[in-house]
Image (cartoon, rainbow, N blue to C red):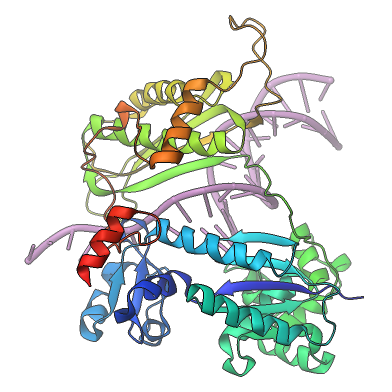
Length: 428
DNA sequence: ATCACGGTTTGCA
DNA sequence: CTAACGTGCAAACCGTGAT
């Protein structure tokens, strides 16, 4: 029997979140920008119609924005994350088998649910989410994650579906009609590099790919592409992941709000990013064995000389201690810093990550027994969780941070911050 | 000739 | 007025030294 896997995906998620709390944004072209107010990462239907492309740099469409009164918002991740939590916990009530795939998407396993009424059930879910959170969602259903993703795409693009496209309730003929009509690049996992390669071997539509024999596939194609082909043929290769796998690599990087020249500012930013990365590390109960830091000038600026450098610092002992990690990374920064450049971005990558339960101390380590995560870090994390993110910071991060990213038009954190809520009420 | 390993690049969301 | 273009992760790739 075919599985019934659903993908629930919010429409224009970030824009929709902004609209829930600011009705003035409704029925108008709205764009939400990436960090540092750099590129368009979410667009309302009106903004899409005006030709704003996904990922388009803000300065490139500013004339269009002025001409059509497009409203641009800085991204407000505190708000989006909270709205996401609400949606996900509601959806969990509809199926115990849930995989939260991204901030606005989740898979639900409906296998064995209401054989004939599943489409209506899904439509009910859409209405319920809309009513409970104010957010519009679409649902795609298919026999695999790949097909569910695709069905969701079809539901979004074709209003006749009223938010739900269910491949399992379609005739084979009708399903193939859709697969034939859609280009191969729209499939989950097939992007702008792989699709021209597939076209070279005569695969244009999704239907073309579905009918390839994966066993005869050229060596130049990866194993995961074969899985995708099976998935198009109703054979599950990507199961729902019950628990999120621990990260093998943890990154924190940001572009600066202004180009910076001082070593001090670079130090502060690196210290901040190490802090964030180490928080993520502790949250998944891991230690890191290696820390990589990098700094670079703008890759887009052709007028001035550019510089980028990075350094990998293997740690003598695996750790999750922010202070230790900052010490090592600032030592590394001194090695790669070059005076006289205007830096645009810095970042930190933790790798060689191990579970803190598998921690193996150095043979010659002075510390005795198994090293536990320090109580200092535990206190730091608890206080910041309980009382607000920036209650305790490491002094090396700096207090004023003149280099911090641009967020010139950010909405209040309506659902997660009392002070912002007061500000919001005064605006009305 | 083959393997394991690390560092780097590529690709995707 | 100016200048202004994201982030995170894993897979794939590739050179190296060891066997």
